[in-house]
Structures are given as structure tokens and as C-alpha cells.
Image (cartoon, rainbow, N blue to C red; front, side, top):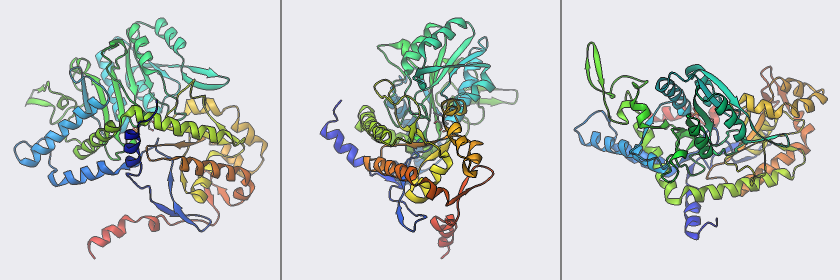
Length: 490
Ligand SMILES: Cc1ncc(COP(=O)(O)O)c(C=O)c1O
């Protein structure tokens, strides 16, 4: 797909429209440079137009449970619009699907859906979960929904790919009367590998199982089709994502679920807002969505900010934004492969295994914590390291290489690091550019080539955290909320 000049002009306009792209920090070598943010898989930066829209809305802020004053009406209408906008963005038919907000990110949504599906079909006690899941799409099912069976991934010369469809089919067939649902991520938060979720849905439905998709890493990066009128067998039964990974920090977690499933059981959360009448001995639950699923006062500004961000992304088109990001990710993979000491995890051929957002790697012989610390302290590149809340997946990938390499190097840094093995993850958002990739690649080459020099500058503590021997920036000097509070009284 070639990107039209109109779409390219929109992209060029949006790329710089994020808060924090000009943040600077002083570095260990005395320079002060612009931060390069490569940690979007953890949380994306704030989209400025969404921020500005919410700031403007604050003049009208009021509780949506109030009814008759102007601000309550504006808030209620906008909050209602936010749900509709999200359903539309994700191609979910509003006749069949409800959208509701859930508090703390995708994790709250996953816990909720595990309980909903359990109560919807209590006769089915088994859940299938892929081996690449974030803990948030594994532990809630273990705790609430019964027995979890982990299904394997494709193997490409020792590197994992997507969920393995033949193994999934076999497990579904062998346990067809017991499996309640399949819980699978749309995009891995470690390797960025994209799963064939619509084929998973079709397969699961054939065997009577429901499908719950973890969309935490999807919504900001690629188009989502929750319902597909041409192929209803591929419809997703429930979908969960996070606003803070979709360019609106502070916005709540979101669930989209089939209404008939929600209607069949009592809502998992009860309280104000979800009832028609309450008597001392009973209560009548409202039929209305989303009210039924949203007990308590919701995060109104967060929901409106998120819907605003999605509205803007939709004007460009997620297919276009996906194309643009794929180009950046394949450029990054290509460039990283030019450094012989860099090991990228997961299948890297994007024709075989498409990816979005994340690339996880290590420099041979160096601990992930050390690489991440030097990237920060000397190159002002913000990345995440360790196991990214996906221990089984990460441990499977690193078991053969890094510990063995570290074992050869009998220095104290690497011995300590062995206790806490993991990876480094560079992850991308709409604001990242080829220049950011070049900075990362140059930094990795520098760290690899000058490893002994850098190693002499660090110590590692009992917890495996790397500390520079002489560079200890005072965080309060980089940003102080107290100074802002003081300024109120100056
Ligand atoms: C794939 C995936 N699922 C779930 C989560 C949990 O999301 P949250 O932190 O919004 O609860 C994350 C967070 O990194 C994730 O990447």
C-alpha cells in the first residue's frame, strides 16, 4: 500500500503533536540532549490535541450522574459520545456490543472479563491462553476462570512466531466441552509479533469456545475489526485495551463485549449508577449500557480524551498509520541486524510474522539492565528492560543464549545480572522517526564497542540495578512538583 500525499500530510502534522518530544535531560558525559522516547509499549506519550480538548472541556466538567444543569448535560453527552466513538473506531456493531470503562488499564478489563465469562458459562472450567501473553492476560484467568492451558507458538529455527494454529486446534478438539474461551493477545508486548486473531476466533467458535482479545498493544498501532458482517464467525466476543497505551495517559481501561453475554448475568461490579431502583431487600439493575457495567462515578475526562484521540487517528486511517509504522519497524530491524553483537528476539522476517510497536533484544555478553542504563545515561534513550510482565515467554527465548554468555565472563556485573535475566525493549509510537532509530542503532554500536569502558563506570546492587559511579542526577532538579506547588503561593 502506498500512502497518499493527503495521508502523508496528515501524518506529518500529527507526528510532532505529542507532549514530551522536546524534553531534555543532562547526561553523564556533561551534555544535555533531547530525550528519545522508545518506551511506548509501557505507556505512550500524550497526544496534544486530545490533551487540549480535555483542557477545554474542563470548563464544563461535571458529574454525568447529575442531570439537569448545562454542564451535566454536556458531560453526559460527551461521555456517551466517547463510548460510541470507541465502538466505531474498533468496528464493533453498537447493536451487538457494549463499550465500558474499567479503571486500572487493560488489567482491570481482563479481570472483569474472566469473571464475566466464568459466570456466563459456569459449566466450562478451562481457558486457553497463548504462551506469549502478558501476565494480565494469564493470571486473571487462572484466578477467576478455572484451569488455564497454555498453547504453544510457531517455531522458526528456534525463534518464536505467532500462536500455533494446529496446536490450538488440537487442544480445542481434545477439550471441546470444557473450554470456555481462548484469551489471546493481538500483538505481543515483547516481540511486537501480531497474532492472527480473526482466524483464532473462527477456530475457537467452531469448537464452541468464546474469544477474548487483549488489544493493549493493538489499538494505537493497527486497525481492529471486532465485528465483521461478511464473516460473523470471526467476530470477537470481547476485547480489552488501555487508554494509557493509546496516547492518552490517565484514561481508563476499556472493555468491548457482546451485550447478550453481559445481559445474561448480573454485573460483576455493583453500586451507584447501574440500578433502576434500590429497596432494602433487593435492587433492580438497569438494562441500559454502559450504565449497567459502570458502577460509580467514571473517569469522564479520561474517556473523552481517549475518544478524541481515536477520532483524530481515524481521520488519518489506522491502515495508513499501520503501514507507516511497519516501515519504521522493518527499518529498525534491518539496522539492528547490521550490529553482529545484537540479538533480536522472535521471528524477524516481517513477511512471515508481521510486527507492531516492540522490538526486544540483547547485546551479547551484556546484561539488559546495563544496556538500558547506558542508553539512558549516555544517549538519553528511554527503553524498558527485564521481562515485561511476560516471564514464561521471555524466559523461553533467553534460556539458551544470554545466561551462557554471561557465564563465560567472570566479572561481578555479569554474575549479579545472571540472577535477573531479561531483555531490552525498544518500542515505538506515532511520534518516532527514522532518526530515532538511527540514534538507537548508533548507541547500541557504541555500547557494544566500548563495553569495557562503560562497565568500569557502573556498579550493580543486590537487586541487579546498575548505578553509575559518579553520575547521580537529582530527580527533583529535573522536575519538581513541589516547586509548582510553591509557585501557587508566590
Ligand atoms: C499486551 C498487554 N496486555 C496487558 C497489559 C496490561 O495493561 P495495563 O497496564 O493497562 O493494565 C499490557 C501492559 O503492558 C500489555 O502490554
